Length: 167
Image (cartoon, rainbow, N blue to C red; front, side, top):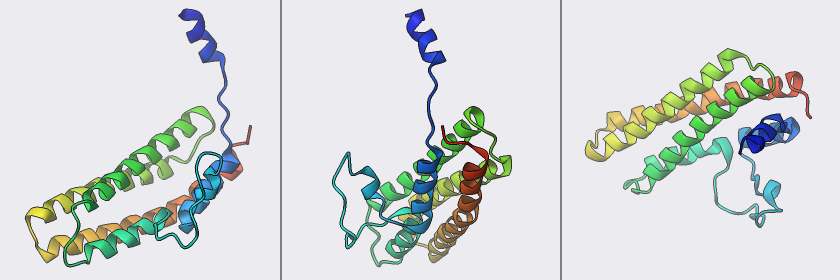
């Protein structure tokens, strides 16, 4: 067992920063990225009505403006929150294992993570309180989150392209 552990510690994991940048660009542009997984699953057609990347905020806002918000919307908000947690973990991993990423960028994503949790909690609150104030706060929060990501992602992509070599 010790030999396996020591072997694994010596093994170097390769990070393909070019691929990471492509995926972040796809996310930032709301692009259908299913073609990047074609070896694993089928490519979804361009006319598919799914929402991709940063456009999820716009789709969630549209759903919130419906007369009756589906109960499954909570699942989408929870997935959004979990995605932001994962992004923070990824940025910290790259920072700790490959090259420094500006701490203000990581802190910015931590704020996005916290705000996405607030948005999810506001949605839960809105199920019990149909106040238009909560609805407006939630819409503003989604617009704010989208703007923060639009501002941070190009800087993160720049850090990855310029400061971390592809191995």
